[in-house]
Structure formats: structure tokens, C-alpha cells
Length: 105
Image 1 (cartoon, helix red, strand yellow):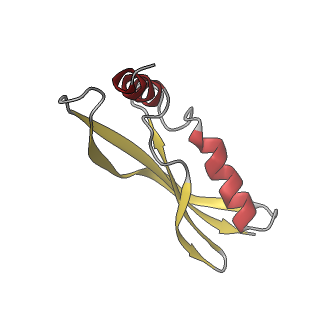
Image 2 (cartoon, rainbow, N blue to C red; image 1 turned 135 degrees about the vertical axis):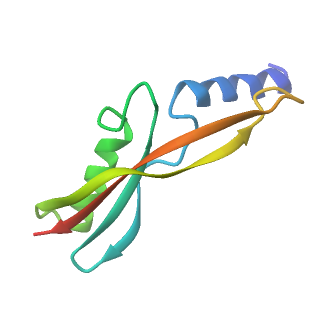
């Protein structure tokens, strides 16, 4: 497989999945909870995102397996980035993100 076809294949796989976006991650934390964010696609929405389960797992891990309460959740600041699926071609990709503020019980 030539080098340029390999780039095209990787770019296509990235676009078909979550756009090669970062997964769920904790962006703020304190002793009793924090805030976790994850990317989602427009057509899918935040509740059906493959990363929502990862976000829930991070909250459970942060709370050492104990239960937690979701204080609030909603769309947070996303990001726009440039991808180059083909040599010389550039495309702007907007990533939307969902945030969940939680407290451990």
C-alpha cells in the first residue's frame, strides 16, 4: 500500500469514528468530584456518544467505586481543527463537547 493511500485510509477511519477526537477526560477535579468532558457528533447527540460510557467510568473511578451525583451537564466549548485527508487538501472539522459536573457520595 503506497504512503498516500495509507494516509487516506487513516483519515477515512478517523472521520467514520469520532473524528479522531480526544475521548472522555476529567478537566477539573477536587476531593469530592469534578468535571468530565467528552466529544459527540451532531447526528448522534451527547447521550448516544460512544464516549459517554467512558465519562461515566471516569466519574466512578474518581469516586473510588462509590456512587456520584450529577450536579449539572450540558454542552461546553468545543474546538475547530484542520485535517488534511488528502495531500494538499484541508478540511475544517468542528468538534462538539459535552460536560458533566459531578460530586462523589
